[in-house]
Image (tube, protein in one colour):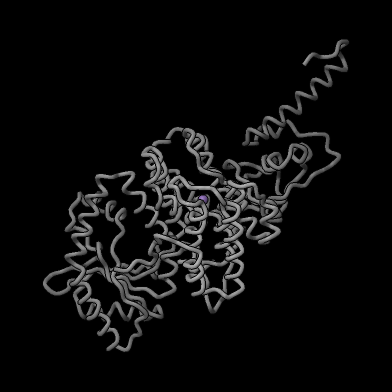
Length: 501
Ligand code: MN
């Protein structure tokens, strides 16, 4: 059974370089060495909770990303990701040595800080920070996933209550976000590493079932794969790869619960994955497989013409093979495969033809998508029900003309935005452009809007009417404060004695 990413046991600089050599140029490798030396020096003498030298942590995070063939600037930022947080070195120094782009990513991670658990409110505050960081630069989140994966890999050394908390958070927050970003491989890894700490008994049971199935089906599947490959070749189809994939344990667990633990009802514990060059080849392969073996009714799924909400594309079919055995096939192009494994990270995946592409975080569609992801994640959190609603739900993400992200409550207006930037900008705000269109000050902003405030320097102060539509506490407070001060001034002019504070 093949897994896309085999998680490393002992990572060294050499093993990272070896991995990077598969897709990087020499000057990139030099930069990586520099970043490693810089980080190793900064973390010198520091140990992680498991007694290892600290540098092993950023190094492994970088290595995990290198396995995804991810853009070199992200690898460098991963190597440096804990430097400003844990050492005396500043972001300025990082910017001087490694440039603004890398420094910005490191800054994003530093802003997230260490997710320390101090009650539910703090938990939500961290979550909120995470979404803001993600809106600013999704690459920060990709590094955060690698960071979290290594923390989970070394979770054994933590005390049990911490193990549970970190694993639960990974299951409830990180994995769903990875899923919504289409990063199937990261989602699966995050879930499986967390599973045994959150549900230890169930984990043992599921693992046993999975191992037994693989022992039973494995050799048979090998036979089927050889047969499939031959038939496809005979038909003149080019097969890029054909491999078995086993269902990840946590996703197996979810399915077992749905099916009342009836293993016989689950047909995709193991599956055959067929990678072909073109979309038309996918359908051709499906036809050939159906000619060989009879498909199960209602089990043919065309996620190519109708992709899943997170963008997943493939053809799935379940067929009766010899002696009544049932096998699931997943047919896709290489491009679809990489999208399914890496999702949004595929935008920074090295492509020899196109070079490293850039997806813009300041994309309007993306901000809307983010607001949706946020709602979904929040709706799935287990025991924060009452708090999460007023504290955090229904936030929107809007942008300044410079591309900075600001999160506001739903239906917030340009006035809320203005006060968020600065009290004076709020007090003197006279108009607003949203996506380059002039709008009234009570317009409800939406995720993805680019908002500009028009300031009138001669304006005396806010309008009392604004209180009728502003949504944020900050805006209300500043407007009231302004009028209270005015009142005091006015009283001072008519009263004989100065007002006491
Ligand atoms: Mn870290």
